[in-house]
Length: 299
Image (cartoon, rainbow, N blue to C red; front, side):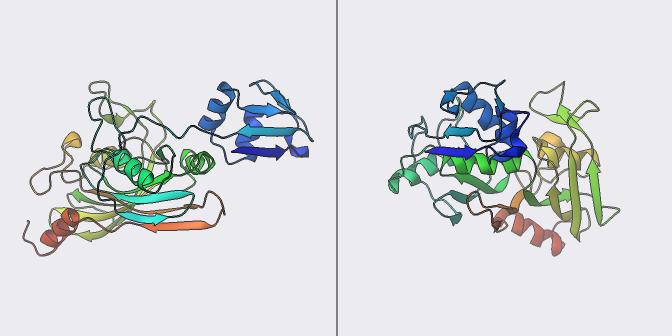
């Protein structure tokens, strides 16, 4: 697929990278990749990073991609929340990796989606617009076209979509609502972990206590920024780690994974630009834990 863009007056003094980031749905990462692969032309000539765009220029972007990828298709049950010709939304279970790694090439969400695409005669790669930790359940978005992926990825990259989570955290919260605004970076002692670091990336999480129990709380969280392990690090930093989150100090006594679920997402449709709202039901393990806390079975 090739996309044609006619540069208007506002394009003057912008280089091609700046122009496409501002005047198209392409993400910063995608623009860099297309320029590197020489898939962008200005007036019929290959575009390079330092080429400036003038009003009236014709921009041609080659978005065609080979459908083949190395993902091994595997037949598995998928909890599909939404699907159209542009993207697929799935409620990922806890304990499943989103995409294969060298050590775990099988039994990932990508393997299941690849099988699903093949079964529908869709010869397309598996393109994730967002990712979740292995033991976090909830909404994952998979684009069906390169252009849809760029449009969705750009929204995630700019934190312009709204992402809401449900979690069960230790302790009694002093305030029913709050904002955690603390920078996050890699933990120098353990590169798998993230930590609050002054030189880290700006990170903001809003929280609201839905129900306060004796020694834990059922909370709703909104990600204002999207950093690796952001919710887990932020809650741990204020003394309320998620139940089951052993990496950040949470108790494993009543649940064997971090009690965190990506339950709602609001973003612009990659083609129509109409706002889309998706929700994924709270999984059974977290629902049962809330009931046990509510009934005071767990003190």
